[in-house]
Length: 352
Image (tube, rainbow, N blue to C red; front, side, top):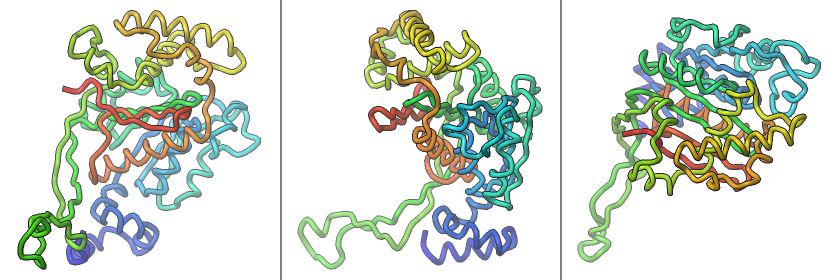
């Protein structure tokens, strides 16, 4: 963004943001502009599930400067939470996870209002979600994810979901009909200092000038992304490029539905056997070869690993910021991270 344009924007918006906030968010304002920062500071976000991933997302949103963040979790602090959930202080075993996270979360940024809700998200009526600009769910069943996404999709609320299972993690976004702007550097035709030849015809990028380009993307619902008919010829072509972690996610979701929990180290062998059985049955029913997930996949799906939470939480938090600020192209619609290979993949599944 050119200096003149930024100065005009500052003059236009300076009455909206305080000097204290301008100083605190100076780096962000320089990065994505004051208009985008103001959209953030007017946004209310619901974050469901204060696991290790939830803590990472909460940290990123609070530091970014949303107006209000509600931490919703009815579960109690367990010993395993200490592995990745850094917002919960020592000695909090048995207390509510959201309440235990509140103080450290609030201390990250006094300009953000951090609220706590200890009720079960399953019991929340549809109107509850309508007060938020964005809703992010983790630690939830497949049915609940699909249900809440449907509510958000119908009411133009930005929906996100994510989880971490051992070395693996994912995020999903449904932004509905999403409009945003991208900054493009000015391109000049040819080299003015050269009269003839190849150099005179090459396009040059002028880093001192830029323009904002408005764009729009239509997102599909989570239900459509999860219920692809893989038996069709078109889907079989897509299957060759689809990350195996997409099917791993389906297996974990089925395990969570059947057992009402995630795989636990205390029942390692029993859960490994069940995950393998689910893989065989589920992928076969989807017309997908079960061998797409390697035989030992289950042993890498236990507990939350802090480094994986950091990566997935960083991407998820940034995507929420981009959606609320309407700045830069969002990931459409999945992001999968494989800690064994140290790589992340963005893929669009279920879209038109």
